[in-house]
Structures are given as C-alpha cells and as structure tokens.
Length: 57
Image 1 (cartoon, rainbow, N blue to C red):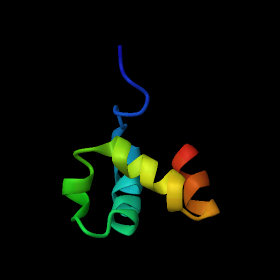
Image 2 (image 1 turned 60 degrees about the vertical axis):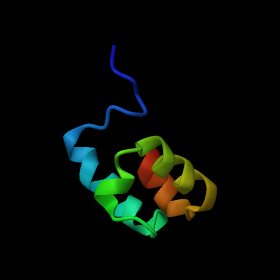
Image 3 (image 1 turned 30 degrees about the horizontal axis):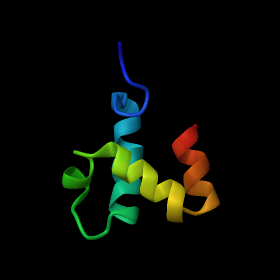
C-alpha cells in the first residue's frame, strides 16, 4: 500500500524539488529529496503560508 508522505507522484516531484532547494538550502535538491519527510517537515516548520498551501495541495 502506498504511503501518502513518501510516495510523491511524478507531477508533484518538481514542486517538491523547488521547495527543497528553498528550504533545505545546505544540500542540493536531489540529495534533499532522498528524505522527502525532512523536506516536508522543514516547510511545515519555517515555510511561508503560500509554500505550505502549495505543499498540501
């Protein structure tokens, strides 16, 4: 059964990649996306309102 947090659909991958480069600035986006839960947690923690809405949509 797919996990809703870790199984990112292909069309959502680019959005998460852009957010990863913004919120996990100390790593390149590809490295950050190896741990999508960390990217999501960082956005929920320090993300602006628009980015959080983008994440949950």
